[in-house]
Amino acid sequence: MRQPRYAIGIDLGTTNSVLAYLDLKNPRRGPQVLPIPQWESADSHAPFDLLPSFLCALTPTEQADGFNGADGPPASA
Image 1 (tube, rainbow, N blue to C red):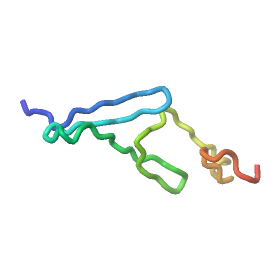
Image 2 (cartoon, rainbow, N blue to C red):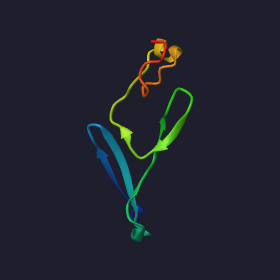
Image 3 (tube, one colour):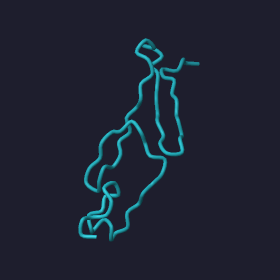
Image 4 (cartoon, one colour):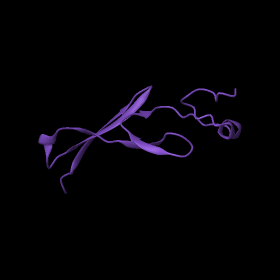
């Protein structure tokens, strides 16, 4: 049986979750957090170290009004 290349750790927290790994061929580098691509808005995404442990799904009305879930309601509300 082949030896594994990576050791992984998953923290499934109540607020955030994190994925980390250790390259077993280069352990001196130490554990590394794996950034996870996530939506920042309806139009863009970016990698973040923390993944929220919950889901905020916008309604079609919220999307049409420009509500992105992070900044609170749009100024017109």
